[in-house]
Image 1 (cartoon, rainbow, N blue to C red):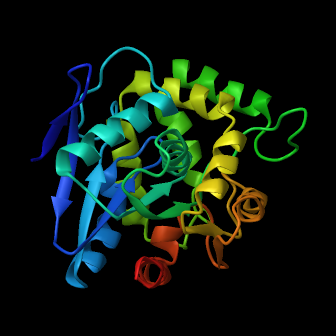
Image 2: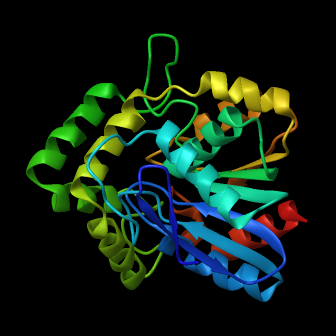
Length: 272
């Protein structure tokens, strides 16, 4: 079942490989499920079923015109989960995907979930607010939006330069180029609309709901993250009772590639 159709007839690409405990991966902006290649390879050989969903507008999924927000993404994920009849899954979200995973859990009261893993999550708010002095300045995000209208490749190149703990040397140049090529495959429209959603979304109420649901949550975060600063991880850890905060001391945002072995080991340890 490589594709699943959702309510508005949009087809979502779903990579479903391996057998065992189901682990569902939700990618970040503006990537695709390809970004988890080295998690899939490692977890599959250790007896896990790995399921990667390309969000609408990204990867091999349809790229419709229309709304792009966390509510729609959560609804799409539920349709895929229902189609695959998944139970007691671990839901893993990276960056924007972490925010989407949080919204899914809150919106559907943890339906189908056994555990959650938030990797470099853009949550509970990616931007600063009057009562939330953390994250990106809204004016900086507005500048990114303006650049998406005029020079998307340059926007994505700049994003790539701050993705890791160092501009060069923390991963191979080939890995960096590979990630950039995935970013360029995204719909320009979806790329733009999701920056707007990242700027505007406030998931603090969702975080409270997750705390009340008492779902086991692990928070993986790079200490040197320049995209979703480490203070966001501490806020999530404080706001979700019993959550496990795992510090990645050598990583920026792309910790699943910078500290690949540790990411895979910590994932399996938490899932089990």
